[in-house]
Every structure is written in structure tokens, then in C-alpha cells.
Length: 93
Image (cartoon, rainbow, N blue to C red):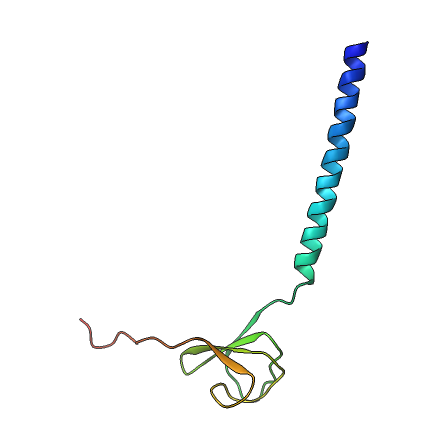
């Protein structure tokens, strides 16, 4: 009977620890889901308005905006170069 009581206590402790870990994990997942997501919007289109943290491609480079804008990347404004255009690889055999 004492063995059964010890096993039940161990199981109870395990259930409580597991529930605590599950709650902590659920809180971490919820925090990650609340974060602003980066959004790639494709090739820059001057008719579109871009939101903060949007990314676009313009003249072969990747650009990130920190504010709502319709401005063209590479001009003064909220756009920042994220990845510069590389060589196109032409001319090599």
C-alpha cells in the first residue's frame, strides 16, 4: 500500500510539473505570435503603400521600411538597404 501511495504522489508531482511547463510553453508561443511579422511584398510598386517592417525588391536589391510610405527605395525616407544587389554572373562561361 505504501508503494502505491508513493507512486500516486510521484504521478501527481509529474502532472503538476508537466502542467507548469505546458503553461510556460503556451505563454512563449503566445508572445511569439503577438510579434510583428516581417512581410515580403515583392517588387516595389509605386501605387502601393507599404507598412512598417515591409520588405520589397527594387533594382535587384532588398529594402526594408521603418514607416508607412509610398516613397521609392533609395530616396531619402524610411527605406533602408537590407541586401545589396550582387553581380548578375553574365560573361562567364
